[in-house]
Amino acid sequence: MSSRLTDYWNPFLETLPRERLVKIELKNFHEVMRYAKKKSVFYRKKFEGIDPEDLKTRDDIKGLPLTDKEDLRIAQEREAPTIYGDILGVDPEAVCDFRQTSGTTGKPVYVPETYESWQWRVEVWCHILWMAGFRETDRVFVPFGYNVYVAFWEGHYAAEKLGCEVVPGGALDTRGRINKMMELKATALMNTPTYGLHMAEEAKKMGVDPKEMGIKRIQCAGEPLPKATHNMLEEAWGAEVYDHIGGTEPCAWAAMCGERNGLHIMEPFFLVEILDMETLSREVGAGELGVAVVTPLGRYSFPLVRFNTQDVVRRGKEGCPCGRTSMMITEVAGRADDLRKIRGVLFTPVSVEEMIRKEFPVIFEYEIVVQKKGIMDEITLKLEPQEEMGADAMAELTARLTEKLKMKTNLRFNIQHAKPGELPRYTLKSKRFKDLRGT
Amino acid sequence: MMANDIRDNEMGLISELKQKIVEIERLVFELKGLGRGVPVVEKNAGCILSFTHVLRFGISDLVEGSDGKGG
Image (cartoon, rainbow over the protein chains, first blue to last red):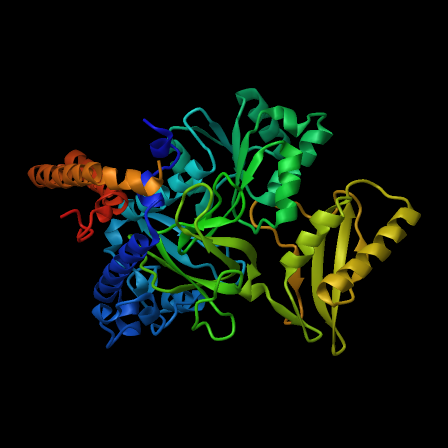
């Protein structure tokens, strides 16, 4: 077979001219809407009086109401025959997998999957892993107990479907995992960026250079991956590092190809709108930031129409040197619900991570806490250096960091110091930002 | 060769793939019907249909004029 066919998981779909992609997406959008109205009480009410056939273009879709995470929470709190509330799109007996959101922003949302909808999710991940170069020759180590969180389950099953050999690495501590990876000669990893950095740090403490462990590629999940963190991970492991964006409710909806320069929207599995942050009514142009609104197409157990992901992303152009024709995202800037007003200034924690990883490699771990002091907001950054530092070096670091943070965020931070190893290490989603003003 | 040129040549293959997916679905529905009440048949046939759902999405939809259901 020519490389044209084997370079892509689905060479026909991934290189389809855009007008055909858009046509397929609209057709499948109609199908999802029709299905949701028929099978889900939640959507029957939400779309009362709306005929899917009246929606002829992407612009027509803008008139439909959004679905927020809070809508899902409320739907699942209502009296209903199942724990999934009145949003469930199939008979309860057809549900074969339970997953839930992490609960970072509130009560977790329960997400049901049928065997069919689960295979649809796995297929999306097959595209993601194939793009990232995962192949039959890889032994993939997943250093987590996956529990009820979806991303690593999806990655596990997709890697298996690709023909990789998958090693579930839960029920071990970090050193145990590093030893197992070396023992089994793992060639690929799936982890959160934070845990990838932590494992590299632990390996070094064990006298092992992570670069010598034979890991060729790492698929990240669970957290944002700013460019500077991406570079740190690639440097630490001597491996190619791949990012994606998604969530438990809609699935992963954009991912990196071998160019590692932006994310491809997984068209036509999803109809993705990137809307202006003020009104959520206009699609932004290339180069602009917007909020991603995602409709998964082809998954019916938990129908979602125009799900407001709250992910703030920068829209790129269409196409890529890799030959894929899907729309691109050039930056994941953070989450709209992470945006905070502190002393009247808009602040997003990702901007601090980007700066620290890029300009302060001496800082290994950090935590940001916002709280009220009287009527004033106070923001503190607690930093943990890679190793013990002398008083002079720490004073110099503090002064430089304070100045850079002020320039970057327009906020004056209090800087506190933690001893090496004092701040928490995270395996799944990190919680480095704490807003305690409402508590 | 440009990807678009190859794609034009591939439409015949895609149509043939779609036809096979339709046939497999028809056969599996028959199998499921024949084995109604027999867990090993019903459940495994159901699993196969989940995979043809994915194939319909990835292949059958590409055929111009397809209704997305492989038919």
